[in-house]
Image 1: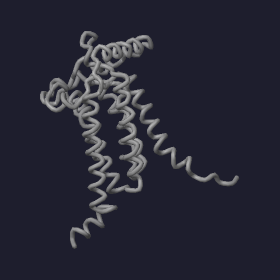
Image 2: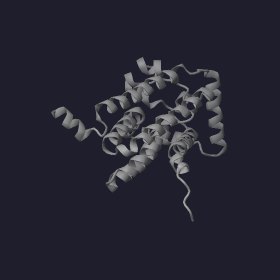
Image 3: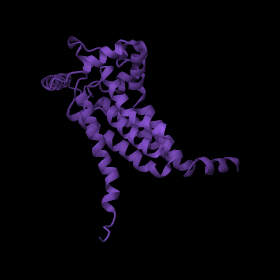
Image 4: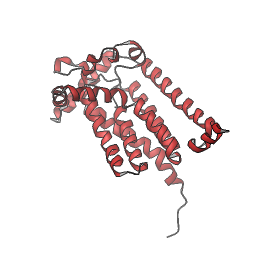
Amino acid sequence: MSAIAASSRYLPRGWSDLFRQLVIWVGFALAYQVARGVADRNPAKAFENGLKVIDLERNANALFELSLQRLADSSELLVMLASWTYWLSQFTVVGLALLWVYLRRNEAFVRFRNVILLANVIGLVGYVLLPTAPPRMFPDLGFVDTLAVFGSLNHGSGLIELAANPYAAMPSLHAADALLVGVILATVTRRRVFKVLWLLWPAWVSFCVMATGNHFWLDIVAGIAVALVAAGVIYGRPLLMRPATAP
C-alpha cells in the first residue's frame, strides 16, 4: 500500500509509464550511439569537409575558435569546466532534464521528449551525409584536443571509441540539445533565477564545445537550425491543428 501511495504521489502516470519512458530513452540512446558509431566513416571526406568549414570561416574573417581555446587554456578551472560540460551536457543533462520534466511538469513531457528525439535523428542523418572532422583534428592549425588530458574520458579510449563517430561535427547536437533544453526548461521552471540560468545554458555549451576543440561555430549554427526545425515540427503541429476561430 505504501508503494502504491508513493507512486500516486510522485509518479504522474504510475510505475508502468515511467518504465516505458525509461525504455524509450535508454533504447534510443543506445541505438543512436551505435548508429552514430557505424555510420559511414570516410576520413578523407571528413577532413575535406572540415577544411571547407575552416575556409568558409576564414573567408568571413570569423575563425575565432582558436581564440576561445586560448582563453580556456589560460585557466585550469575553465578548461576543466568546459571539458566536463562537453561530456555531460548531451545525454546526462538531457536525460536529467527529461526526468525532471516528467516528474514535475508532466504535461510538457511528451513534446519535450519528442523534440529531443527528432533533433537527434535529424543530426544523425547529417552525420551520415556530411561527415566532418572537428577542429581538434587540425593540430597543424593550432587547435588542441583539451579532452586528451582526461585519460579514460578522451575520444580514443574504450567504449567511447567504439560507439562514437569521430567525424560527427556537423551539425552540433550539443548545441541543438542545449538550445532545446535551455528554452524549454526556462519556460516550465517558475523561479526567475532558474529561468535565467537555463536561458544561458545554450551559450555556455556552445562556448565549451568550441573551447575544447570539438566544434566550429558553423557546426553550432547548423545545430541551432536542427533544433528550430525539430521544434517547428513538434510544437508547431498543435497550432496548425487548432480550428480557426471566427473573426
